Amino acid sequence: MTNILKVGIAAAVLALGAGCTDLKPLQAEVDSLKSQVSRLSGDVDSVKAAADGASRAAAAAQQAATSAQNTANQAASAAQAAQQCCDANSEKMDRMFEKSMSK
Image (tube, rainbow, N blue to C red):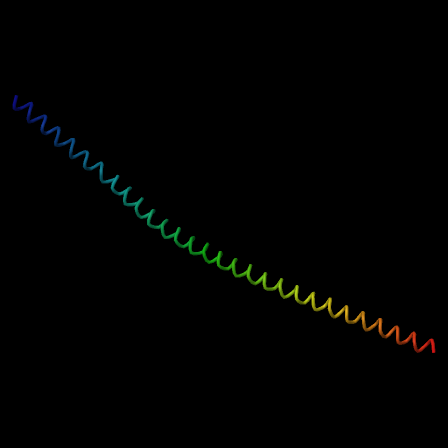
């Protein structure tokens, strides 16, 4: 009976020892995965920073475009006013010429 018990205990010790050696490759994989997750986390942070920078640049470009559109609208209004003035002057000059020719 004691021999059977000794053999059973020895088998259990060997099984536990074999089980422990199987954990080492798993631990190495877990460590590898941890380093990959850490690296990917850094990559995600840099991508987020780049996206934030692009968003700020797009907002600044939109503001510049709006300002340029406002300036163009003001220039168009000034050009229209100048054209109206020019048309009025031409009309006055035509009337003056007609008056001088009719005399």
